[in-house]
Image (cartoon, rainbow, N blue to C red; front, side, top):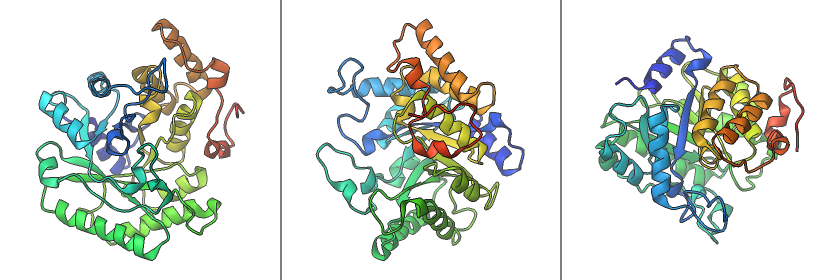
Length: 336
């Protein structure tokens, strides 16, 4: 069965994109960065984690729904679900996280995120290639010559190894989590320039299929997406859970300013009804509903499903992520 990802990427590259071609990935790779709490917290007791079998079942359910184009997983989850055969007759593409850089390490009581990102890769490409042909490679620029050289050398080695296989990748680029000596408002420019510079030395065959990066506001997103349309395809990551309004506004604004992919982890996983949330994400992206209206309809759907929302409707219709405030075309000024 043809994968929806490949069909949509083909349309985007050829300049035939429509809003129905927007790509959504469910990022269920949290176990590569976190520990026991990777699957999330229990609904009734946030001090206790959900179990991992439930996390795997959420992946099965999402793949069966066909609502997403990519299911991103750890190598261990990939092995289990691929061997179960759930992707065989599905349009969803399985993908795994190739590397686990230190800036995603979120173990309880750890201190790793207070230091510049260091490259590390647990996954063996030979083992991965027997399961899937797509994965995520991550890099973070720290404005530190030694650390950034180390990260770029890791990317170069990875691309060389990949060249001996049929494996493909998309590139995750985080904003630095520490003070790197650049004013906060200038970080988006530093990140955009770092991406473009690092990819310039790669041939078409060596380049990533698309990017996964933070939404750093309309100007930064539009600048990067306009740089080389069709060749440099930009995707956004979800970040924290936020409100449902944050989720819908993030995909709306990202698509509006040129992004063609959304790769959400916590925003999907921690939703009251992940499948229903993704359905409304599609409605917002395709212009069938505005973000404000979509939150209302999402709550109505939760009621029909017998699910209690985590937040009252009025609170859930507020924007709480400040990067989303910049878009001046919003019909509703629902800020925290």
